Each structure stands twice: as C-alpha cells, then as structure tokens.
Length: 442
Ligand SMILES: [Mg+2]
Image: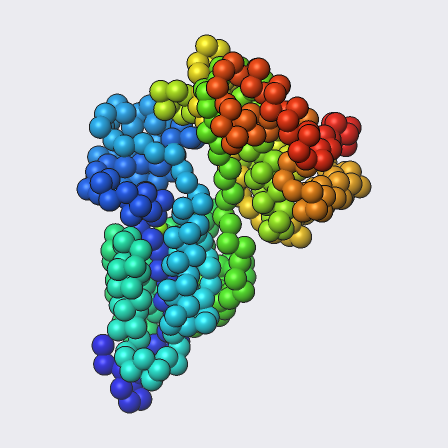
C-alpha cells in the first residue's frame, strides 16, 4: 500500500493492530508437544466439554462446547487433553511481550488476543504500517510456534474486523480509504460489541452488513441506539473513539491447582480433602493477585486417566476457599464414583476479576463479606510468616498429611496409615494452626 505524501491520512490516520491466536488453547498444547501436530486435538477433558479444538478437529465438525462423549462418536481417534491454564497464560505473556517490543501501547484484551498502537512508528522501524504488522505476525509464529490472525486498521473495531476476516493464519489490512469492501463482506452480527438484540434490531431496519450500518446517518444512530453502539458506528466509519487500555492487566485469566497422589485412592474423604487443598492453593494465589472468581471447575482423574468433573457458577464473586468448597460439595457427590481409584485432582478458578471491581449484590451481607476477607488477609500474613500449610482448612488436613509423606518418600502402604503418620510428623516440624473457626465464619 502506498502511504507517501498527503495521501497517507486516507490510509492510516491511526494504525492499530489486533492479533488473535488461532484455536489458542489447542495450539499451545501442540506447540508444547509437536507430536500432536496435524492431529485432531481438543482441550477441556476436565470439564467434559470442548474448550478449544485444532483446525483438524474443527474440520470434522468438532467445535467449542461439544460434549466429549460426542467428540468420541464423531472421531474416535481425537486426542482429548485437560486444560493447562498455566501453560496458556505463559504463552499469553509471551504474546504481549513480543507486541511490546514494537510499541509500549498494548492492550491485553484477552488470553489469546491483544491490540497494539503503531501510530507514528514507521520512521522508527523504516517500514510501512503493514510491514510492521506483518513482522509482528511473523515474530509471533516463529517464537511461539502458534499462528495468529492479524488485522490492521485505523480504529479498534476495524482492526477486529480485520483479524476475523481470514482465519486461521490470516493477515488483513483495512486502510480507511478501502474499508467499504471489507465492511460489505461482514455481517452486522459479526461486529465486535454488537450483540444478538442489537443485531435483530438492525436487521429489522434493513441492515444486513457492517457497510449498511455505516451508511445510516448520525441522527438515526443517536435516536435509536445507545452510546456504546454509536461508538462502534463511529469506529466502523473510521473515526477512532476507543482508546487502548494499556495498563497491564492481571495476567491470570484463570488459576489452576492440580495434585497427583500416590498411591491412587478410592476414598471419598481423602479425595475431597485433595480438592480442598487445590481450592485453598488456588484461592491463596487469587488473593495474592487481588482477584476473585465468578466460577470454577474441578476434576478427578482416574487410574485409567479418565477425567470426571464439573463446571460450577458461583452465586457471587469469591476467593474464599470455604465458599467455593460449599458450592463444590453437591457436584463432588455426582462426580465421585464409588469403587473407582483416582490418581489426581484439580481445581480451576474462572471468570477472574480484580477484587476491588466486585459489586456486592443485594443478597450479600457486606459486613460478613468484609469479615471473611479480613480472615483471609490474616491467613495470608500468617502463611508468609510460618510457611505454607501453617494454616489450612480442616477439610484439607488429609491431603496435607499425604503430601508430606509423598515428599519424604514414605508414601507406601495403606492410605490411612500413611496419612496418620504424616500428619503427626508434620505437627512436629511445623507450627500448625488448623482453622476450625472457618466453619463459623462461613
Ligand atoms: Mg483466538
């Protein structure tokens, strides 16, 4: 694209790039384990539904949200793996880091996508905006071994149109002067920020594509639509009104804690205490980062490497282990199968938000919530002073005992004998303050 002379303002008055990882979770799994390349791979084993699928799996009709039982029917040789959010977070951080080599103005929009502002950087890099964007895309692929779809344009909404335009591994530059061709080929419902209700309304007014929408005049838009949709209309028209949110966000989109134990166990109490330990660990990490979760998933992995688990929504945001355990209990009873030996457990906190953003709803007693928060602040302080496991929920006791034994290499023999010995040993070595009072606070 020619960008010289007076004409450049007709191309990129601002230059914003949006990069979006293709089938990101599944792609991270393949990048870590190249023997999976070219195969139908899905993640989400621990949830019982597909979280992400490689393009080989998508080609067979396996998409997000499909039940794993159906995946096996569609494609018996599909490879189903458990989500590893720590891995995905690492790749995510590397993606942001690569983008920041080119510009300090980066918006960490999601675990697999970000915006960057390249405005004014052509001289710095002696390159056109399109060449800078192509170079970022090439760096991402070379260093992460994951393909990204990239959009470049003069507004955030148009850059998003670009990154969606060709997938996977797409590169779409939408200069201001040429945007109408792209908008004519984009259905209005596919535009970032336009939900099903707005789509239905716009369609009822004869608007089928994004171009139809941009052809509506400002008065009409102001009369019938709210401010956020009006901003989208402006951005589609090439007027940049949305700024990048460039403060580094919390880097955790989910927090996961898993444990493998030896020997495998079929004892419900023991398994529950393992999950309790996972919950405590995940909540401690969430509190360290000032985050609360709106949901969580958990799993038990059998001796035969089969996962059983559940996705749970919380009634309100929380990072307090006893609240999460309370919500887990009924699901645990469904997931646990008597007679099955299990070898690992795991918990993932999802829907993380900064704790200060949390709104108390009408059904939450603010004093009680504050009280719980104070208790856990105290727990975190004591943990720092006396070490991990100095304080723990009574329900985690069995797991902590077993963990100690495994670590000291004495984990052979019956589960209950092992646990009793270890717990006693632990008490000798460490100041332990079990927290039975948590039951009263909750
Ligand atoms: Mg993506």
